[in-house]
Length: 190
Image 1: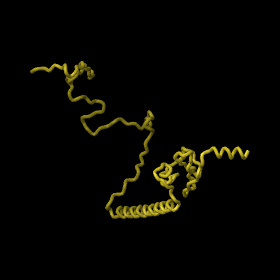
Image 2: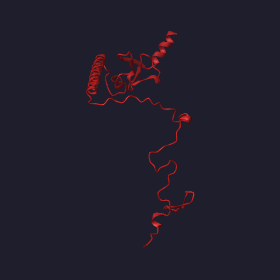
Image 3: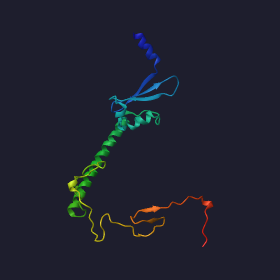
Image 4: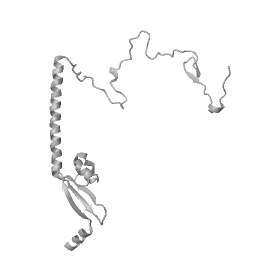
């Protein structure tokens, strides 16, 4: 059976290990008969495709896989980038701490108002729920105006409107106009 597996390996395109990254991912070139080599990665943790995140593969290796970079990145290059990111993260922590101390000082001196604490009101129900609160908690709408009563609003023009008439029950009945093409409209002469 060894001869069969050796023949299958001979028929399969050659796979050449190009390098690894700091996370243990392996990068290969698959060389076929004179065609452009195909580049691929085998992740160290054998991620399922749905678990892939952009941080899984370093940007330098992504550029190499996509053909935007001719030579694969070296381990020294990857280590340099990692050190730069560590330094940057440390600087960000220092700046955030300095900002927090400055803000506390401004609060104490009264230069800046402290943000309001979270309110103790709790939303009741959900937007898709038919009732948002208990029926015993409901109140009728109120107003601060002396002349307004909820549900009694009337339009200011209680006579005729432009396109219809107002009946005794305050229902508006419209009389539709027929559409006329712009070129056939007759203009009224005064």
